[in-house]
Length: 465
Image (tube, rainbow, N blue to C red):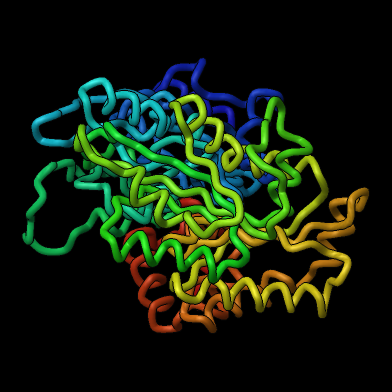
C-alpha cells in the first residue's frame, strides 16, 4: 500500500480534515517549545475520541509505522519531536472533562484538556486540582502525565503521578486499557497506571485520566523575601516545616534571574531593590476559612533583609508573575544551556556551590542562572552566555556541561532529570547515569509492550543492547 492509500485509509477513520500533510499545517508539530530539534512527520492525525485513537494506532501498527504522541508541545527535551517519516498523533481534540465528583474529590478528564482547564473544572465545584506550573495554560494533561510533571506545589501534593487514580490508555497494538477506576484503595495486583506515567508515550497513548482533587485554598499568604544564601533559605523552610506551616510552595531564585525579569518583563514592578544574591517566594495555604497563616510566615521571615507580603489577590498574583515569566525573561537576555536536576533538599546549597565552582573553572565568562522548587530539591540550573553571543556558538562552548552538571546531581544523591523528562536530550545521561539494573528492567518492559519499537521511538530509552 502506497503512502497516498495509507493516508486515505486514515482519513476514513478520523475524517479528511483531521489528517494534516501540508508543510505549513504540519510545521507546528515538528518540535517542542525548546525548538532545539525538528522532524518532518509523514502526517499529523487528530482523532477526536478514544475509539478513533485506537483505530489509528491499530492501523499504523499493522503497517509498521512509528507513532509520536503530541500534546501542548511545551516540553524542553525533544520528547515529542518526530522522526522523519513518523506519524504524529495529536490528542488536542480529546479535550473533554468527562466527569467531576465533588463528594468523591475526583475528576475524569481527557488527555487533550489543558492543565488549566482541569483546574477550572475542579474550581467550578469548589475543589482544587493541585498540579500547577508555568505552562499550564497550554500544556495538556496527557503530556503532563507522560512526563510526570512536577511544578510549584510538589512540596504539598507531590508530582503528577501522585494525583492519578486511574488511566485509559491505547496500547501499541491498538487495544485499550480501561483502568479509570477512582478508588483510593485497590490492591488487585500491579498498579499498571504507573507504567505510563513518566513513560513519555513509549508504552502507549494516555487518552484519559481519573485525578485526585483537594479542598480549595480559602486562605493564602504569599511573600517574597531576600536571603543571603541558599542555606539561609533552607533555614526558613526548616523553621516553617518544624512549626507545621501549611506550605504550598517554596521557590528559590538567584539575583541574576530577578534582574532579567526586571529588565525584560512587561509591566513588572519589583517590590524592593535587588541587593541580595538570592530570593525566596513562599506561599502558605489552607482550606480552613479562619486560619491565621500570616503570623507564622511573618515570624519565619523576620530576619530577612527585605521581605514583602501580598496584601491582596492582585499583589499575590504580581509576586507569582515574577516567578512565572523567568523563562521568557532569561531567553530575552542571552542564550543559555539549561539543566533540570534534583537533589535531596538538604543538598541544594552544595549543588549550587559546586555548579558555581564548575562554571568558574570551565566557563568563566558564563553566569549561573538558578531557579527552582527548593522545597522539593528540584533546581533549574542554566549557564548564560555573555550578551550578544550566538546561540549555536554558546551551545558549542558549553559542550559537556550537561554531563558535568548531571553527574554532580547524581553524586549528591539526586537525579539528572527532575520534572522535564528525558526525551532526546538526556539519552546519554540515561545510558551512563541510570542504575544499569533499572535501565535493563525498563528496556525489558519496552520490549514486552512494544516489541517493534513503534511508540515514540528514540525517546526516553537509549538504544537497546
